Image 1 (cartoon, rainbow, N blue to C red):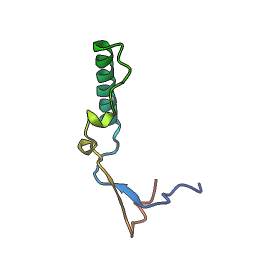
Image 2 (image 1 turned 30 degrees about the vertical axis):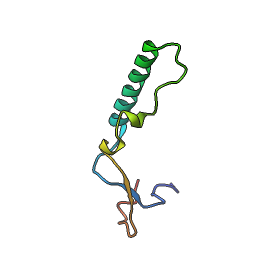
Image 3 (image 1 turned 135 degrees about the horizontal axis):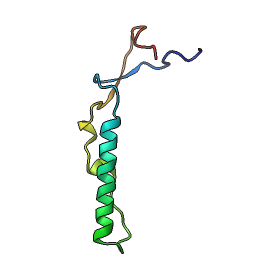
Length: 78
């Protein structure tokens, strides 16, 4: 396969494989907040804010990425 290797050497900071459980929980908090705000005032035309108002992105398992200047060949495999 032509694209079986990474093209850019950008990697996650931690050993966590995915952010999926954290993102799922943050989206659930936001949906609940929106539902509660709509029940409290159904005639209000403004909705609740963004997900980052409820869940801090720095508290996730993978909280960032880094660029490696000289990556090992095994790091560049998909």
